[in-house]
Amino acid sequence: MRIVLLGGPGSGKGTQAKKLTDTLGVPQISTGDIFRAAVKEGTPMGLKAKGYMEQGELVPDDVVIGVVEERLTKPDLDKGYMLDGFPRTVGQAEALDKILAGQSKGIDHVVLVDVPDEELVKRLSGRRTCKNSECGRMYHVMFNPPKKEGICDACGSELYQRADDSEATIRERLGVYNSQTAPLIDYYDRKGLLRKVEGVGPIDEIFASIQKVLK
Ligand code: AP5
Ligand code: ZN
Image 1 (tube, protein in one colour):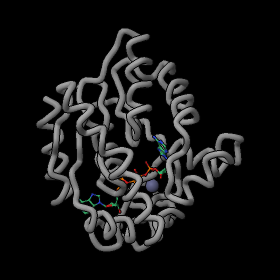
Image 2 (spheres, rainbow, N blue to C red):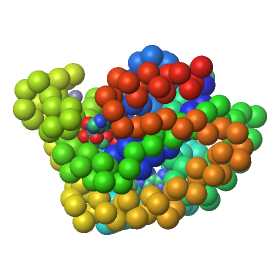
Image 3 (cartoon, rainbow, N blue to C red):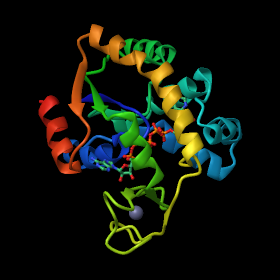
Image 4 (cartoon, rainbow, N blue to C red):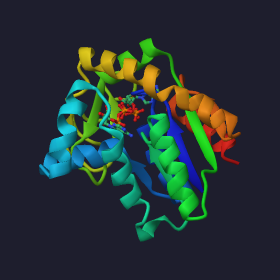
């Protein structure tokens, strides 16, 4: 099954993708995670992406599309995958359609995790993420705290606060989402692929709603 997870910054795409990976048995492909790893390693792509990410702006389409195109040729994707954070512009969505058409494949579902802006700000300002890139689980200081403060329940690594989770950058990311990414809601609705899920409420309830729309 090939799925796109769509939703504002902090809507819970990553949180839900981690749970879905276990039940569906397909990998999560997060362009945000790929870029953060590249920034950490200091690769040429990471150096290109860093400034945009710190400002809360989008990395240019040609860079992102190149990264995804390469990832989609890897051999671990036979059963499908979940795209988390891609596509984010109409240009990226059109490029994805082309890549998939070239493989005689298509998207099965686009899941929109719908959360109002004010809730997104609260979520991002309290988010903590596992430092271990193999794990990468997300927590929230109030809504989803780890059992032991500052430590990942799953792997015992330290938690950190993302550089782009400051109030000013969060506002910028929301603006970018509303102007550049939200048009994809219509784009996929017209193709009959959009499955909208209420993204406010307990994480497990949202997970159940997502599983329902994927059936
Ligand atoms: P990216 O990493 O994709 O960030 P994002 O879209 O802003 O999404 P987030 O990872 O912030 O949020 P999420 O929806 O995964 O929420 P989460 O599960 O963590 O991108 C970062 C940057 O990289 C971009 O700004 C851009 O520069 C660049 N980039 C990436 N992809 C790109 C692309 N395609 N094109 C161009 N540039 C690109 O949850 C958030 C918090 O809420 C957590 O604390 C969590 O515990 C909590 N939470 C989750 N669910 C609930 C719930 N139901 N109730 C209460 N709290 C909850
Ligand atoms: Zn962890």
